[in-house]
Image (tube, rainbow, N blue to C red; front, side):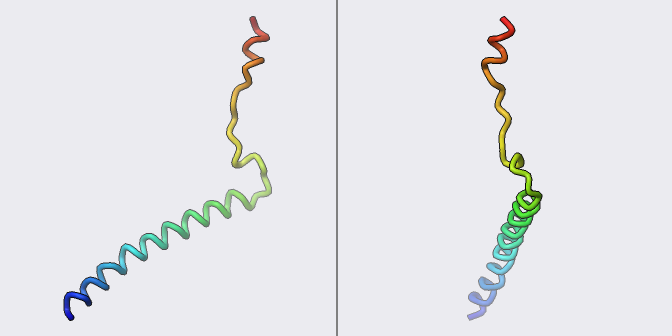
Length: 55
């Protein structure tokens, strides 16, 4: 019985850490997505024709 009590206490800390990490990720997503900017999730890719036009 004592072992199960220690085990349950040992599982509480990792669960709290995981929940805090999930909450932090959600907070970042809400902060970046709530600005109304659609360019926040876009990745800039250089266009090839700009390099070819210089030749």
